[in-house]
Image (tube, rainbow, N blue to C red):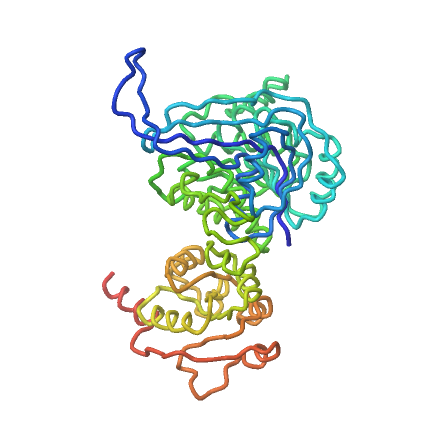
Length: 489
């Protein structure tokens, strides 16, 4: 199913170099520029991130008929672009960095413009969405009345993630989740409180939030949840994670973020919105999707953030500037980073003539036996997808004391292994339903089944798949490791 990104685009320019001296004209650093990089920003950055992950994505926006607009289209290679004319110069944001430290930003053409028109092709593209991201950057696309009417209707049928902007309109009613950062949420809550004559509006959200506390995020989120009529509001707090407020009356959920070393947070909110869309489209609950999306954003920053994004402009004869092959060339899949969402990965590998391998288990306390079996399984094909028992599934199978490690951490540890390409968590007692969705070419189990027919054999063979075993290492087990740890404790 296609992800549709709706919103404002801009051309981002990074000038990078070293600053080793001050200007003789004024006490300002002189940057010896050694690199210039351009990329699509705003909604264009969200779409590019999804395209890099292999997702089928459509970007619905407006673009100016100027040099910056033409550059934007070049930097959106690999994204299905449905764009109308903006009638105004394309906005350009130029950042100057010394090393990894931002020094200054210059904005051109970023002043507020009238709400642009939308054409029938743009509206039709939005209607084809399986999930929608509204990346509002205050330039007016999200304020178009016809588009808002359509988004309001679609919000009843498909998940809509709305990333608001202080200069933009409120989200339409019924969106699955709105994602303001703490500063945006507090500012919006203050504005609403100042318009409400009731004393109850003075609830602490208007009192600051400089420390990034969860209390300020929750208070502001409650106000916005009620005013916006969203199903949920996820207030992001940078390195402190996020706070999720839901309309169903549950208590605010604090979503922690892993510690990362990151100099430039640019793009983290876009990465989070993209992650939410992917995980909701995969059928995960909002709570699980929020946790995974916060980790996605942290991983993005830890990997270098926007500075690490490859250049995807098209070169001669429509070739990709980085890989040197056309997007339709089968070699381009191998040259680009493949998707890690399991169902999409399986489909992508099959479409390119590869073999999909899957295995399953609880993987509670990884040990050397797991590593050896997973490595052997990966050698049987072109990708390895692990079907992982959820926490509830493990408890039913192993007892109330298990799992020792939660499903999110177990999945993260598995994905950290070079031989594992994706993880699919399932809630049932057996992997049958997960296998029916994946339909792998090869289903692998440990060699303790050797000589016996695997329980999943009939199912896997029904679509032409095979069941194989890999070497089993009986001296290594999770139970033995857990017992040993208990003795040490």
